[in-house]
Image (cartoon, rainbow over all chains, first blue to last red; front, side, top):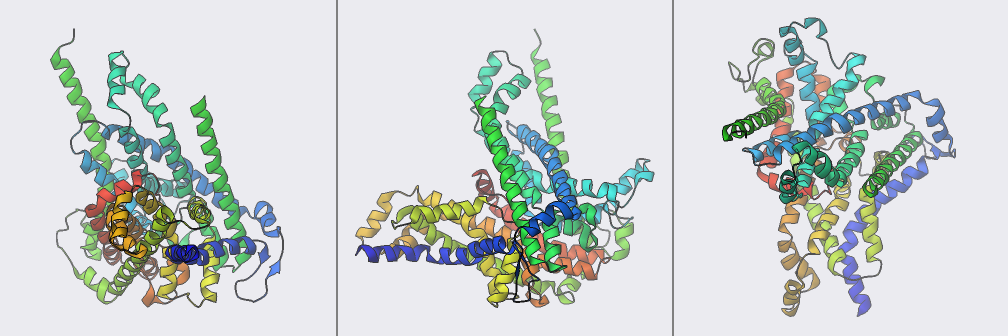
Length: 294
Length: 282
């Protein structure tokens, strides 16, 4: 009876466990295994090379580190500019204000669009046709015509342009989470602080920010994980002609796998990159704990 | 003593500045999309000369051409098919598992659930390399089934987590009443748990639908045949061929983006709920 009941209960989780094992756990173990091999993805023979792939990543692969630096730069802009904007907008909406719902709906439109669509639309606006290039037209109209250029083709401006478009696409996430966090702060706290003679700035600095630390950490971790792994936006923006100056780790992994057919090396890059991401989130989490206890 | 008028003016000015700030960002959000739609209704020449958001002459030919000559009708139907299949699969499979994790007892329950949740936290950026190999071995690469199963697996952990949290709040009396009436476990799942979890299922549906519709990298490594490709993949290929036919490209982008915006506008209540539960990130 007991065994029959157990079997019956396993039936409920079976489809999930099977799909998850075949399409998540096995690939995960496979990536780990392949990262120690040299394999072209076609031949039945794999050569076990130990940690050779990882050694190569660390000392012989400048284009990998270039892509890491690029992703780090985009992430830095997302952490500061994008999240600051999100926080300011959330503060502005966390009050009795008309059209609050309208703003909330609009700010989350960019995040629901695909990275490919956003990339292509923005490329059309800022890079492609001189006649329709809005940024250049604006510059020319204001008398700064000499600065007009192909923002994505110029290696000096390409990465920053990518980072700004990424921030445009992403700030809605932070905004919604910050707004939800701010709305959990009891209104009485604000009134009490004002009665005690605190200015809006004092309240912001001494009450709102400290109470928001867990939310800020959550948004920061999500921003790092999301931005470091973003890549389709860059394909949409820069297209097939991308050079090193806008490449990011996931694009490197794709290129190593598809163009050079080095499956083992691509897996090693994936494992190393995943480990770095886990480490960063862990450090952020620990730092926030220390800050809260201090 | 400052007068009431002083405070009133101060408040109105502050509100005005805040609205100005919010409005300017809102315009920045909307403008590129309006520009996309406007450009899709112009001719190639008008794109260079007519810079208004409402074109002087409206041309629907681009849409006609996108659907008839560039096969966007087929890509659109592919995307619809993949999205509905994956979402349907996830709702059934995840709700069965979540119900078991929440209400049924069996050895290993907590360990298996923990593994599902851990998978949600740990990023594996290179997993598509292994999926490519695996699907080749299973002869599922370049097939709709291979893509659908991969995408179900992608959305599974998060959906199980959301639904399990929701089932945990379900009153025991509901189940007991059904059991006394002679309902089997499967019957309780179907007639008690699923109806109870409707709001959570709505969140699961919306988020997975967005995720599948917008997915790119698995579509890139799985599909070789043009006639199986979903919209995102088709757009990249299309741009490779018609790099400078902007009105046509903008029509393709509009066909891809508009359904998702409409779904979002109707379901935004559930999206806000999903985001602010803090659990979901894309």
